[in-house]
Amino acid sequence: MKIDGRHYRSVWVDEEDGWSVRILDQTRLPWAFEVLRLTDAEQVAHAIRTMQVRGAPLIGAVAAYGVALAMREDPSTANLDRVCEALGRTRPTAINLRWALERMHAALHNQAAEQRAAAAYAEAAAIAEDDVETCRRIGLHGLPLLQEIAARKAPGEAVKVLTHCNAGWLATVDYGTALSPIYQAHDAGIPVHVWVDETRPRNQGAALTAWELGKHGVPHTVVADNAGGHLMQHGEVDIVIVGTDRVTRRGDVANKIGTYLKALAARDNGVPFWVAMPHSTLDMRVRDGVAEIPIEERDPAEVTDLTGRTADGRIETVRVAAEGSPAANPAFDVTPARLVTGLITERGRCEASEAGLLKLYPEKA
Ligand code: MRU
Image 1 (cartoon, rainbow, N blue to C red):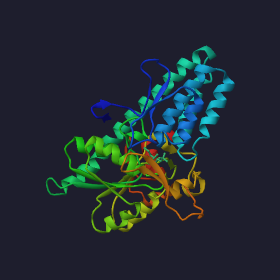
Image 2: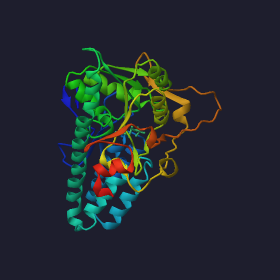
Image 3: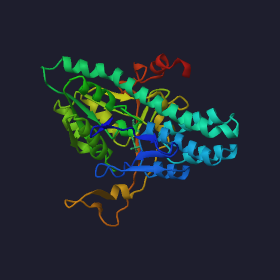
Image 4: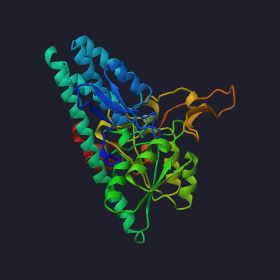
């Protein structure tokens, strides 16, 4: 996507040295646009753990480049096993991480050691390209949903979309998942307005989604996470579109904490609730999302504290919770398939069910 006229992806190999890995530091957005240079797998693990890079598809792609950096230093099988294991432990909920690492391991373990580094860079690049094309196609398959709503409205009246967290290009290699249809609609001249959930505790909505949409010129409004039900009751939401970190065999959806409450409110108000899912997010090995998907527990300080920019430009963290009160920080929740209107994938749209998924992905049976 373009930032001030220049095309960026969220991860790339440095053009000058041809091997180090560049990312945008998402902990600094929207206040500062900083490109980081990662030179070893430990730095990659740190970037994923501290959420300098985040979003399910992006952490998979960056981890793949982490394997490439490790193979450049030591292409032994022992190091390949070690780095895949270490990177796999950085974040537990998004299945894309394991998907990417398993793909890297499968591509490399039979290679001769002297070919592993080159093969690792090639496979990581293929994973990144796959994600770009997947997200572009999710946009194509989501666009008709917005076109249908626009067709029922008066000319010029905006399609009102609500989204949670950040499932835009910053969360993927390019285009995004949930935001991809929105960008396509906007670019096609369909008036769109996006309600952006702030997404406490880390504010990926207020900080990242709002920044992305603003840079692309998409009209949007940031709302408190608790505003969604009220907006739906008053006819202010035509459709909810969110991303996902893992979809189970029966169509349960793990996504950023608070997604489930949006799905409940959407069901109560007859608002369609769609989930944008790349193939790399489908985990056919689990069925019951609530029982089986590991939910990341993050630092309680993310709940008790808030970071922002002061009027004179300093980035400061302040405590908002009562001194001494403990906090809990489950980072994801699971929306049962019955609350999901459907899945938007790179192969088309389907019901959030085993039958629906197998129609689009018969090879996963
Ligand atoms: O904790 P994060 O910021 O990595 O969580 C991101 C989300 O929950 C996204 O909605 C999900 O990864 C899909 S991104 C296309």
